[in-house]
Picture 1 (cartoon, one colour):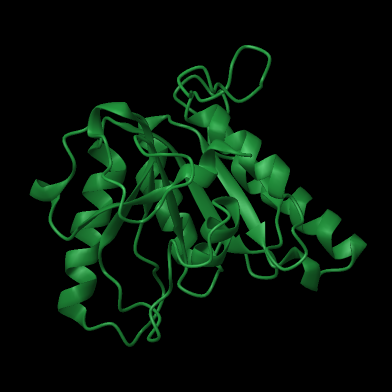
Picture 2 (cartoon, rainbow, N blue to C red):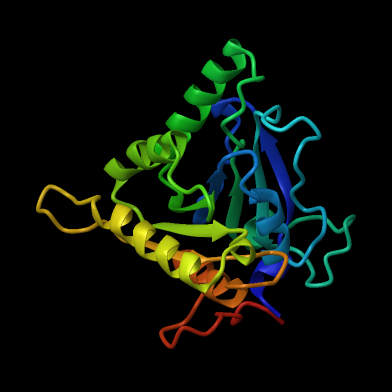
Length: 232
């Protein structure tokens, strides 16, 4: 059983001042409103409705936090979360890319998300979720531009990979790697950006994504195994 299966709702944030005071590592999930972000997060955590998309895509403008640890493995919804035992946070960022969102809401989203992405010290890495058929839209690239100055890792999930044939999958992965390798630091060294194919429907890439996320959250041991030393 993956440690991600312990995920449970912790809090929702609409203003920077309300961000949790916890000091555990956080990994944020970002992507267009129709890229399958909520579906991917639910599959990784083996829960059907941990994260759910609004019936009106793009309307949800909050940052939602899910804790790892601090609760019984069985995770009865009424069990109190023990904050001092939380080991990591999964952070579901607002989906982006829908023109129907009012301008005022967009401005608030930009300020909230941009500041969180660039300045949150606890943020260990970003998972960028993109439709494998239409990756690296203008808004996806804007997200990378916001995040690149931090020098922190990015792991890209190319979702809906089941919609591609073998050649298309190979090309999508190769092109994505080319884009990511173009991001370099002041010394010309590539940023720690990785990418994989993913399909919630066919469960393609599930184990790879799980292992990468746990590694980025420092929840694996030196051999790459899940670090469950704190569990009973």
